[in-house]
Structure formats: structure tokens, C-alpha cells
Image (cartoon, rainbow, N blue to C red):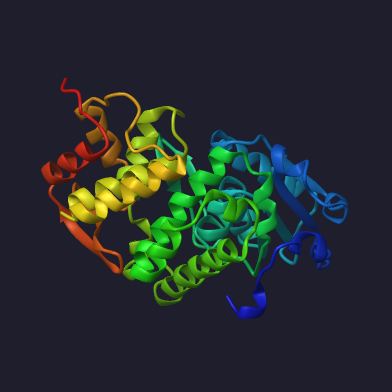
Length: 340
């Protein structure tokens, strides 16, 4: 993605007009929450609206989106605009990659998770079979518009969820960025303060550098899954009791425990707790169910798990063939496992 294809600025959504019909048709994809905050110019674009929430990241909603693209007569020269959180950009990017064997798309993330992670790097997906992001493609957006002022519209819980993803990316970037993130308050993002916008910009830079080095997620880009093997399993077992970001925060604690980084684990626990994010998983998952959830992890190869280790901020590495016993022991950082 070129620099001109990425714009970050508070108020951007009201300052920049939506893309014009390129001549092959245009469809705006959003959800029922974001539709209500679209500026008038964006509301004038033909649109397809998903029900808000993670349940829309499904095969059925993907099919409805593809039918909408077809009904809007969007052809190979057309364009899909995905305006919303991670569900919208993940599903929209996948639909764009499939429609007419691939059409251009643009991402306008309106959630913190979307702005620092989901809308960047071209990974697209829906959930299938109880797993997270199990069906997807890599299809880069031709433009990404990030307007931090949209974060003021987020429910507080979802803003906090995004902060866990910011923290994940900061741990990859290094000690300076980690310290800067842990010093922030939720209002820095909700109010689009200079410090909050700077952290969004830093996350974008960190992620895009890894994407440039490893577009198809075979090597260093996998570091961006820090906390996610643990988090996705907890998210799947929670049945909606925790959000994706809350699960990632818990996953970071597990990753630090797995890596033997006790001081880091304590610092993360203090930071998450101060922000109001959970530091304990809901309920007591049964060990067998947790093992099954781990086996659905999209990074798994054969029967072996891949865990992203974090010995310290900036010291993040990929551990192949992770011993299941050590992985299960790491879950003790956030839960008490019930035995069958």
C-alpha cells in the first residue's frame, strides 16, 4: 500500500468524499450501527447493511453481500467500500476478492480494532465451523481511510477491546511503544487526543512493515498473532461473554506466562486492569473443550500448535511445535481449568 493510499486524520470522514463510481458500479458495505453515523455524502452511496455484531461474520452474510454486489451490477471495474469495524472490513474484503474473481475495495475502519489491525494488510475472512477467521483470502484494499474521531461513537467496552490490540502491537514494536501505550487512558482514543492518534499511527506503521515483509503470513507477519491462539480459544468457549479484544488481552497474559516473562505478565495485568479490561476468563472451561478449541486455530499445522512468544517488549518470536502441556499450563494465567 502506498503512502497516498493511506490517510489518517481526525475528521477525515467528513472531509473526504466517498469514492466515485469508477464506471463498473459501486456498493458501500456497512453495519446497522455504523450506518447511523455515516455523513450525508456517504449515505448517498448505494449500500448493503449487515446486522451489527460478530455473528454477521458468517457464510450466510457473505452470500448476502455477494448477492447485493451482483444486484448492484458491480462488475470487474467496480468498487466495494467497506465502512465499519473488523467484521465489516473482514467480510467486505473477502466478498471483494470473490466477486467476479476479484474487484477493488477500500477500507474505512470506524472501530479501534479496525484502525490498528483488522482493516490493514489485506487479510479477509469469515468464521466457519466454530473457528475464528477459518475461511478467507489475502486481498489488499486499494485505499484505507482512518478517522480517529469515529472512535467517539464506540460503546466504551468496544473501545477498551481495541486497546488490547493496540497493546499487542506495541509489544511487537518494542519497550518504548509499550510504555507509551500503557500510559494512555481510554479517553485518549475516544477524544482523538494527539497521544491517541500517535499510537494509532505507530500501530499502523508496525503492522504495515510486517505485511510488506511477509504478505502471505508465512514468516515474521505471524508475530501479529501474539495472544491470539490463546485468545481465540477463550473467545470461542465464552459463547459471547467476552469480546475479541477482551480475549486478546487475556491471551497476552497467557503468552507472557507461556514465555516465562513473569515481570511482563504482571505489568500487562496491571495495565489491563487499570483500563477496565478483564484479567480473568469467565467461567471454568473444561480442559477437553479448550483442547478442541485450540485445534481449530488457523495457524495449526498437523497436530502441532504455533504460539507467539513474548520474552519482553520487542522480543517477540514464533514458536513452532509448541508442547500442548505447556500451552495448557499457560492458560492458568487467566483461568482455572475444569477436568472432565
